[in-house]
Length: 305
Image 1 (tube, helix red, strand yellow):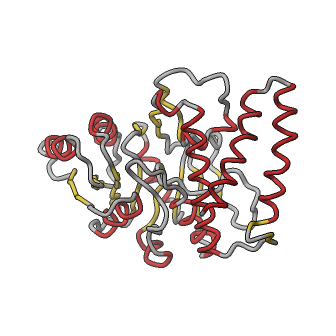
Image 2 (cartoon, helix red, strand yellow):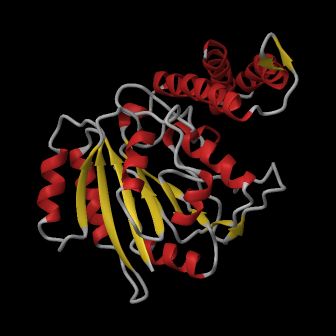
């Protein structure tokens, strides 16, 4: 059983080197082998040199590809098309994987699952600001589903442990042959924030009834730089999130009553944000108040898309 680890990257040469070393240093059991493919999505820093220098000492385990079409989905799809292992794993260029990450992936598929995702913990450059708590984890890409393995129940729309993380996920290649790869209308790189390519992929996994699992031993640690811990970054992220969700809803025609083309539940949620913001301010709940403001930015992005 072999694993192809795919890392899409854009202008993060310094941290990419640490990310790659964390995978190369991870433990490996006798039952599997692995390789790493870095897909450079138009970087203009030293990304190519960093990968090639490391590759010289890996015996062919690490290789470099270039994808000129801007967008994370393009980069990931190029990696998928140029690899052959039966298992494809994804991690990001600004993450460190746990030393048991590869072994955890191997065990999941040995146990008969079709895809898996795992927790994403924070590697904070500075302490979180007072206006942040776990309710706002989306813009910093964190997720902790607990320390127990949880089977995805595709009939439960409210389960919090469902999903597929493009920053910490793995899937059988034969599954991709049935569902298709990542949608290039979603996912971003460079200065633009494009989101939801992994969420849209998960909708197709659900529709096809593939067997997935949240695996707590698939741990990664996501770098959170100080530059992201600003209110303006969170506002920009939520606006992009709204725009990406509008694209997803067009792709999948998600059923919902609409008013002037907008889902009625989204209008209701947005209107409810005003009194909830006021109530949060009265309680001096800064994260709660900011969460309600961010609902408005989400609505703006959805509306304009």
